[in-house]
Length: 177
Image (cartoon, rainbow, N blue to C red; front, side, top):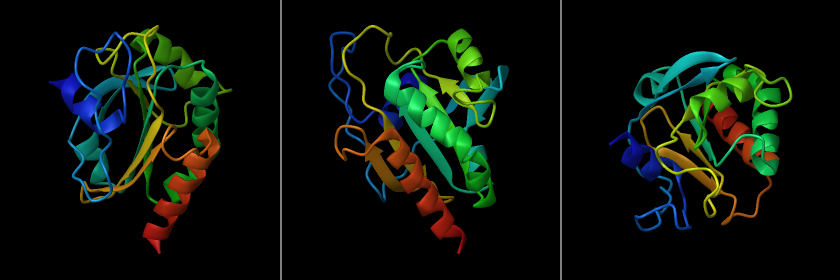
C-alpha cells in the first residue's frame, strides 16, 4: 500500500522494465495529495515522515528524486539545503523521497555537500530498484489543506533542479503574505 500511495503522489512518469504497472500520471494543482508515511533519515539519523502530520505545521515541499549521488538529484538536494532556512521562515517543510535504501540515505542526508542534515529524506525503495529505466525528478508543493499547489517535473517543465527549488520557495513565501 505504501508503494502505491507514494508512487501515486511522487512519480510523474516511470518507464523501464523494472515497473510492472503503467506509468503514473503526476498529480496536478488542485488534486488532493494522498497521505503517506515513510522511513528515512535526517542528518544521518532514523526519521519517520508523515505528510498529514507535517501539513499541520504548514505547506510541504515533497520532491521525488531517483537516486542520491546522481547529477540533478545532488544539485536539487544541495539547493534545498542551502535554502532550508528560507523555507522554514516561510513556514514550509521540505522532504525528499527517493528509491534509495535507508542505509544510502543516512549517508546522503548527513553529507555537507548535499542535504547537510537540513531536511529529511525518505526511502520508497519498494517503488523501484536502482539500475532501472528512467524516473523523473518531480517536485510538489502541497498546501496545508492537503491540496497540490504546484507540480514541477524534470521532463515536462524543462526547469533545472535549482529552478525547482527557487520556484517552490517563491510559492511558499507567497503563501505567508
